[in-house]
Image (cartoon, rainbow, N blue to C red):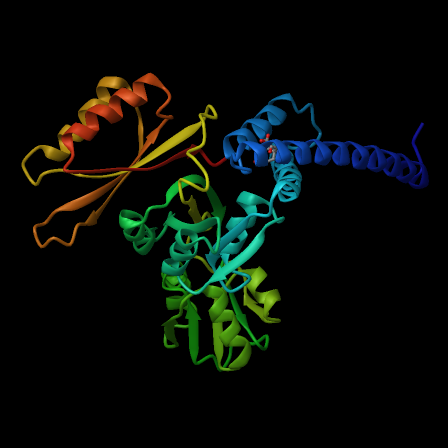
Amino acid sequence: MTRTLAELRTLIDAADQALLEVLNRRAGLANEVGELKRKEGSAVFRPDREAQVIHGLQTRNPGPLKAQNVATIWREIMSACRALEAPQRVAYLGPRGTFSEQAAEQFFGSSIEHIPCGSFDEVFHATTAGTAEFGVVPVENNTEGVVTRSLDLFLHSPVHVIGETSMLVRHNLLRANDSKDGIEVIVGHAQALGQCQRWLNEHLPHVERRAVSSNAEGARLAAQEPTWAAIASARAGSEFGLFTVAHAIQDDAFNRTRFAVICLPQTQPAPEASGRDCTSLIVSVPNKPGAVHDLLVPLKQHGVSMSRFESRPARSGQWEYYFYIDLEGHPSQPQVKAAITELRQLCSFFKVLGTYPVAD
Ligand SMILES: O=C(O)C(=O)C[C@]1(C(=O)O)C=C[C@@H](O)C=C1
């Protein structure tokens, strides 16, 4: 027997009512957890616990909801519960509508206090000065490579990384009217201009490209200047009331950016092991033959995999470099701890940038 639309909607209403009751029961429990944490003086945000909750539910999910939907829904549920315990102030490269804002909401859920900043430097500053408890900064893009300013800022900042999130980045050409004609200037963040180079060379080869502090700032400018077009997200387009002149103009269809979530260690200690963790280090070795090779030996000996190895000039004038290394695992695992201890002895500079659950 097939059910009518009216019958199905009645059943959905009843399911929603039951859901609402369960969700409020959950929120009440989170409130109690919040009181306990206030008494203990412990951190509200526990990314390790949230990662475990989501992975557990995904493993036990009978469907038809997809695993990805389970993650999205529970991230929002936990965001709302967390906000009841205490609001989280999150700094990112603004204005409203940037990919950094999307990354912040993807990681924390939307129940956060937004602190949009004018530059990556400001995000670090807001996070260390206490204007924000957390910051979200891009660290790497699969077409443009590392975000050098973020990596350089990590070096001397007291913040550590407590999480990461990775996002598919789709760029659009946005304008105050819906025509591709008469565009004199294209504005966007330098990274975005780079990620759309091929499309721009082919479609608008003679138009000036101008780097601005963020894509959303470009969208804001394009809303005021009819001969300008901006490269930015659909979200920035709706934020500033722009037309999309061309969709998805990034050269790589799978253009992904990885963001790091930062905070002061006193705000939030390093997350405990979640089962799928990453440990990020910055190291430097004496400038002598074989030194970089030697770095890899403890990793091989203890069977620890390296998922990233980047170098940045040390600016000492001596051809010295800082290496940004991501290891798979958590220092609470004996083999990871042993590899890190041995690695530390080989380095002239050594900093654990953070240890955190791996992004999905
Ligand atoms: O388990 C906790 O410590 C909670 O505060 C509860 C909860 C949740 O909603 O499940 C909320 C915030 C934390 O980040 C982790 C989980």
